[in-house]
Image 1: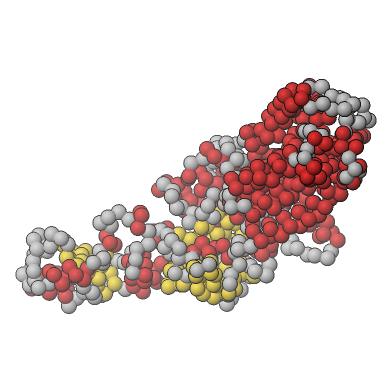
Image 2 (image 1 turned 60 degrees about the vertical axis):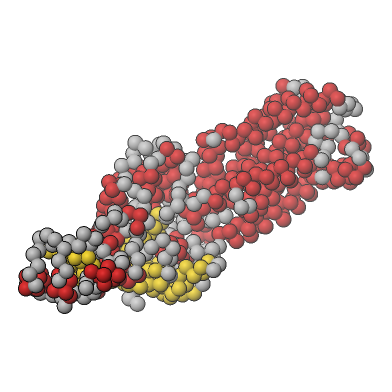
Length: 285
Length: 338
């Protein structure tokens, strides 16, 4: 009767075969949680609207409405704006991580997971993977909308992919900060306010939509050191799109790709352990 | 403690802020039996289950499941248990089947094995037709059944059911009871918390009553009923008769309660051979006519009342339900006894 439960014998650590079995088990747990979160999205498409509808709206609105009023040296506004729109959409979409995690913790379901013999952090990692996948969908939609409104690039395939990967890597890192917020918020609603208080200013006070040269001095300094500026400028550089920030002397604007990678790695290295600490704390009663 | 105990709690204590949820609780459940953990809301039942299922850490005391310490080796304990908790612990956006398969996979079952088991359980709990519908559309009874199915995915040897029938209609309740009985027939050990005395009476081999975080009684349903000893005597007269109370006064074990119309007398009595005969004779000797006489064995509710001074599941007790007698007995008796 107990054959199913006892087939996987209790954690025998130190034996290589058992160790790889444990890793395989964790991978299965993470994949299971990832799939669960992806099913959620398919069930509530409105949840996905900020990575499907919003990118189309933002791309069309900004390019047609703002575009005409913002002169871009050596190129069109569409060429300039796409990297910024990609960053803007992806950065704001990390709110989904905070809200999703918060909902999981406030429903009873987390108790179910905690009483299962699973690798508990799969709850966290599965969430971040599912959100990374939706980010990829978002990136694709931004790219297609961009092409529709006139964005073009002459860069090689490697550089094009590199540009997208750069923004996605930053988004993934940022989603761990969102996870920290979700793990500490009192309700899914308060987790959502993270988006308006932190993510929107972060995305807008940058070179994502307008060159920073026209901003007041202090704001320009903030914008030039904003990681989102480095990410957008990095993607522009990789895609060979107009990048007015290259004329700015701030180090991140001179080396946007390196700066974006450093920012992302730094955020990930700090936020991921912190999130797992908060997670473990939430899991202890 | 013998080794065949599948669930053991020793001096468990747990405090949440100002509330002492558990203040030193002991019990043990032998393999293949059902323990009913009985108590009113807030008695500490759920806290005990949370500790035993590794969800909460005790402040003091020890707990073992299948002989494994829940604090020292929680991951190992989780391999041996199935849990059906009170709150909605299933995923409302997945289908019934997806919920079960996910739980199987997260419990280290292979995907195919997990699917097979899910199909089996859906059939067992008569959820086959609903299996591929999203959980949001399930009725309360269907959810509860799926909850139970979820707890059984890995065929765990130890099962924790936290108020498994709260809020269910009688038919669904009966179904859950049958399922639980079948499980123990297969050798599964069950810890069941409930607010319903009839549920504990019907299912449990042994009952532990807790109140304010302490065990106040522990025994088989029969033992508990016998321990309270007092059966209830109820006498119906054709008309009020002032001498009646005095006539039976020497035979009762407590104050005699008289109904508002003065025709119904009730009192606790110690069970004794020929008790009914003695009562009738005493009343006859006093010239009292009797319409009806009844001696009722104590229900678990009487037991619970005598232990805690309160009833256990007030929301479901109909007014006039036999056991409601003892309330306010003393003042009325004094008024009518003269």
